[in-house]
Image (cartoon, rainbow, N blue to C red; front, side):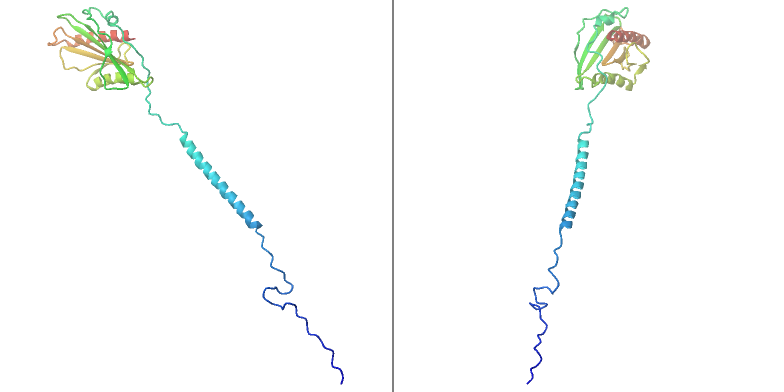
Length: 238
């Protein structure tokens, strides 16, 4: 018996078998791990941009808030001319400037006057020249002193009295001594005439009465005498 062909070993199978679960096919290693570096860098950049933008927005908001808070507030404080006068002249100083006046009655001096204005201190000084059966003259000077310096309340109040006289039908006097504005006021009495004027923070009031308080006076003559007294008062005030 002849010996058979030598035993031929079949092809070697890799071990473990190809395609066995859990092992890659020959020639392949494990899948490469994906790098997270780019993702991390992107996230960091995005965060910086967002934070930067938020910071800018916050700065702008704070800047806007700050600018509005530091804006100059609107002041409601009144301003006006300062008080020009702090005291009134003596009656004698007025009387020496007018001729043929009746005797001067004893002056009362400066005394408080009533007012509805709580921004001023209001006082009155009065002078009267009288004698029986003769024309008489009375001068009243109202001094308005502002409680708050620089507010202009004093002159504003003095001016208001004259403006009211104009509104009530008074006739303006074009110019009179040192007065700012003067007017022949309209009176209901036929035995009197009156002039009002203001000069700075002082309001002057002059009343001339005829010899018969219950009678009728010549208005032309009365106004001439009142004008003389008003001019003397204005000049005495200064």
